[in-house]
Image 1 (tube, one colour):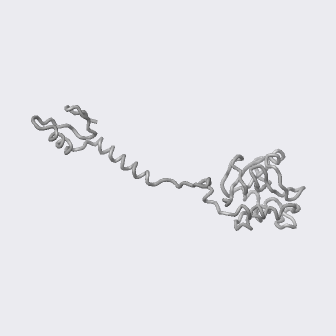
Image 2 (tube, one colour):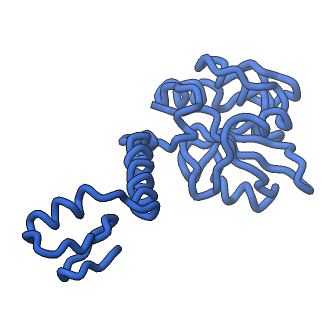
Image 3 (cartoon, helix red, strand yellow):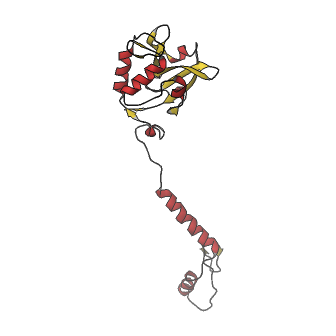
Length: 196
């Protein structure tokens, strides 16, 4: 800013001391002066900021994160219905029907019925979807367990506290996530669909 002899401030115009001219006339001459570089830089900065304000990120009003919007959509009711069809099915290594099924077979079969294709093995399933923390678990999330960081078991979250999985000794059952994690370490949580 420049301070002028007549007691005012001007952002980028210099005061020209013209004797004998009225204050109004002097103001006109001052306003028609050349702007120094500092003032142009301020103007350019304001224009850039105004341009940035036009490109805002999307706002999601349904409490769904930006990452979740990239996931395939599926029905919550249909997921829970499909899980119910498998409840009580005996464990069978490599199985993927209601006659016998293993943990990764349960995941791939249930999601296939929703139109979502997932790999058949636990290790490959861990590489799909978006990572989530324990407190973010929602219905449909995949909960992975294992030893030494290697996944050996997977279940599907029914609530934030419970999951459906195919146990080697009990078949397809509903268990508490944190209780099961006491026997086999939880090593990952993946969200593979956005439920509606």
